[in-house]
Every structure is written in structure tokens, then in C-alpha cells.
Length: 231
Image 1: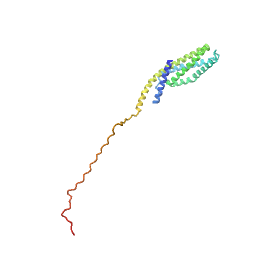
Image 2: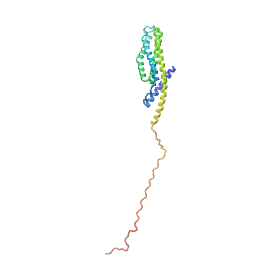
Image 3: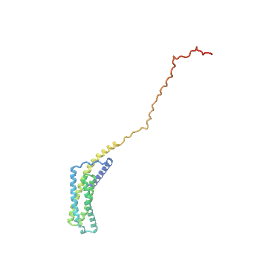
């Protein structure tokens, strides 16, 4: 239970940080997936597909109507069987195909883990009822299927831990790059000091007025001995 809660918290945190980074910095291209990671996923998916086919076959062999129990328990078990069949035939194949296309997608890996977790819980209830009210063959077949589902669930939990750790490292690099991008995009503010005195206006010096022209000393003046003629 503690491991499951830790895994859920780690996954939710990783998904939230990825969403924030993509919203603020845009959708970054996914890094290439290593061969070992793809090989590991293919092996897990192959085992899960085998477990799914075996579970569907064993569920089809159940004769719940012949169990020695009350009608309420029979109806509940039949409803659980129908739920498991719908999941294995419809929901699970869709998630498998999505994971093959995006092997290290955090959201899809977490989605698969949650689906297997729900399948395991419902299948456990059917196995308990088969052990209590069904025949030996019904119980043994479903009990083997339950063990295979448990192995697949643990395998995805371990893979989820590894992917989450890798994503935390990647997110640390994204946060650093995002902070640097924000620092470059933030406009610089100009600080105005209102307490400083206003600048002095430049003093305009007036040009001196031109001096009056001096009379020419060589200009002749009328002679004082000249008198007007009397008629």
C-alpha cells in the first residue's frame, strides 16, 4: 500500500510538472527511446497479452449459475466477470497500442498501471468466489491468471519508477532552461529618480550691440566766411 501511494504521488507530480513546462515553454520534442527500454516494454506487453487471453478463456468456462450460493452473490460475480471481459477486450488493447506508439509516455504508462490495478482488484474478488463456491478447475485456472496479472502490474510499477526518475532529471533541465528564457524575455525597467533637481537651463549670452559709426574727419563743413548774397 505504501509503495502504491508513493508511486501515485510520483506520477502525479511528474505529470503536473510536465504540463507546466509544456504550457510555459511549448511542446518539446520527445527524446529518443533506447533499445533496451523498447525491448523491456515489448516483453512486459507480451506477457500481459498472454495473461489477458488466458483470463478470458477461463472466465468463459465459469458456471456461476451452478454455484452453491445465494442469488445476490451470483449476480455480483456475473457483473464482475462482465466488467473484466469488457476491459480485456476493449480498454486494455487500446492502451497497449498507445504504449507501443509512445513507449515512455508518462501519462500512458500511469494509465496502464491504474487499469491493471483495477483489473487485479476485481479479478481477486472473482477468484475468491470461485474458490468458495466453484469447482477446483475454475479456481485453479483463475488463480493462475490472477498471478500473471499481478506480475504485469508489478512490472509496470517498476517501469513507472524508472521513467519517473528519468523525467525528474529531464524536468530539472527544463526548469533551468525555462528560467533562463523568462529572464531574457523580461524587459528591463528604467528607474527614474523623482527627487533629483531639474537640470539647469543653459544661459544664452546676448551679443554686444554694434558701436555707432564715427564721423569721417575728412568730411568738409561749410566755411563760416561764406555769407548768403543779398539781393
